[in-house]
Image 1 (cartoon, rainbow over the protein chains, first blue to last red):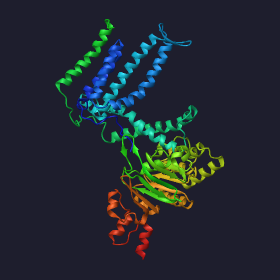
Image 2 (image 1 turned 180 degrees about the vertical axis):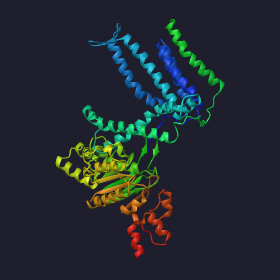
Image 3 (image 1 turned 45 degrees about the vertical axis):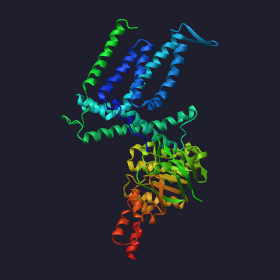
Image 4 (image 1 turned 135 degrees about the vertical axis):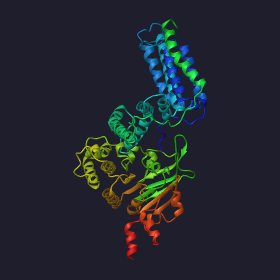
Length: 259
Length: 266
């Protein structure tokens, strides 16, 4: 009764139906533009656009559940480290007794946190609306070698797959009396019994998967028959090109003085 | 007094998949060997995880050996319930078989002499004598499975859960498993075997519980577990081969080879 091994959420939105390459280019360019953009305003605009797409895809609730768990502690850490300890801190925002919090650090932390929020949103938007198998298939239809296609697919599946295995291992060790929660020393003691089976099973699974692929003729140098054709159209092709051009364009703009 | 009791248990996985529908699961099991059978997704593994506290019911109560599971941690329940999971590789991490088998009782803080006794008994019962110093990953799947079973037994628990113990086992291993189940029953332990192997059920489990879609369809003597053919079909299980043979010969229901041979001789 474990969950599936992909983050894909069933749906019929235009993003679910879009060509995997369009969504891939959208994700990569949104992340790149968020990191190239010079000010908080631009990054907020990209984030809002991504959130609008997430809402349109019907996965907002799911995104918030996972994204907040990642972003909240990270943002608090950034705000604390940058606001108190950045070397460029000059202007006092407020003081807690002898400890001073600075505006410069706050601005740097806010920009970094927003950029990471864009990265998380774009990545999950892509993962929630695209089946891992579709990504590899779409790339292979565009000339990517089957070996590389498999690497792409495996890389996208490895996190949920590992989480699933880790859950089973945790259950097995807890059932033997291992305490995996509580104080730091207790957690430290649980580290080896949890990590070693995970590493060993990953190695074994990799080896077995490689053999299973080879015995099914994965290594044959023949042109493969596509499993299916993805719906593509002029609008999507134009959008992909525009996004692909936007990234180097933004880099050039930054170089010539976009502030 | 039953070793395991579930009263009106309802449980849903995150995402809303409800396992035991209204009015919830109610079941009482005594000592001896009980088979828990049913189709995939019937709620068998969920039930066994509820016994050790890995899952907590949304409603109802679970009592094991007189202990209310709701009031105990998983580690506390591990003193009472020995649990062998389907895939042994989910737990093996020590350098030797003996270290692996003694891990549970050591973690539970049992006295050294109890650990030694429990480990020695478990290693012998599981046919691992002479392999104490072997690395568990140098063993084949079947023997790794035995290491996992020995780990579950080394703490001398009152209740033993074996999840698919016959999977990947050859005939001698199945025989050893059958003898082990009988041995545990003689020691007054309650053994719950989750399995799809009906031949093993017929040979080794005097009691059977049939779960289907989260509902107990049958709980009682194994000899009568397969009599209701429509229930058996609904639950996605197949009677033991010997039962099918007895039926095709027009004989009375037999679930074990011994019972079948006795009926023929008669």
